[in-house]
Length: 264
Image 1 (cartoon, rainbow, N blue to C red):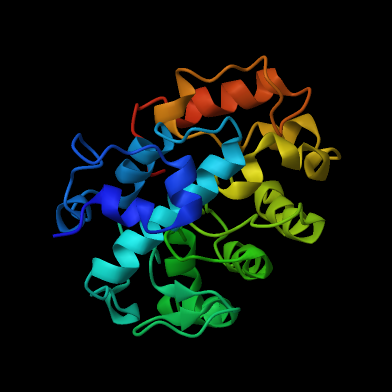
Image 2 (image 1 turned 45 degrees about the vertical axis):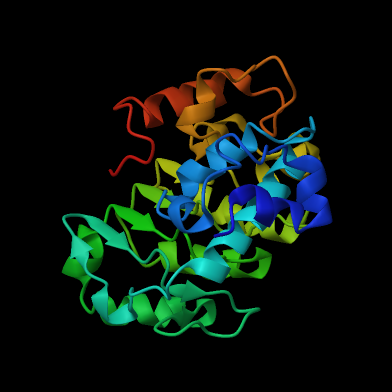
């Protein structure tokens, strides 16, 4: 039965950066057992074991490792676009949208169809006004898909929180067009928080792409996961640039309930 160590050392890039030991956990964990751990929790475990200082390199290697685990051993998702419903005030479309740059996954819709799809789910003004949290996490969306996310938020007049975690935004060089679309979401008058924690573009090497963002927007953008927040050194460079106080206060408000991904 293959272990995490076996899987990591089968790839020269992962094996060089991710320091796992064959006879001690988590390297000794069977892959089929490790895949029972939520992807976000396993990411955090692996992230701490990367032997590089670059945040972006750690992120890339961990995502590659997780892709090997879940793509090879996980059963196809049972989620379907037919399962979506507004629960309370939350519209959860996580894991149900395929990137416009990739083939459709079974049971999913293309990001290009997202706006029309939400209009079908929420056919009248009353249902659209009821949504205060939109979850678009876990969809493997790419940079061009941010425009479709921005259009979707415009359909929800009272949306207070937008969640975009565990997608594939920000791979490659800084993309100002993608950041411009993200800005449209953050600037939405009703939106209080936009959660992009852990996405690739939250690394300090993207700071220049955010250089024209005013302080008011840093009062809304959440880019640090709760698990990292306590130990985060705000004196180091961040994408928020000089607006550290506003960004720090934003994170404290967002995580006030001590929930890693709160619903509003």
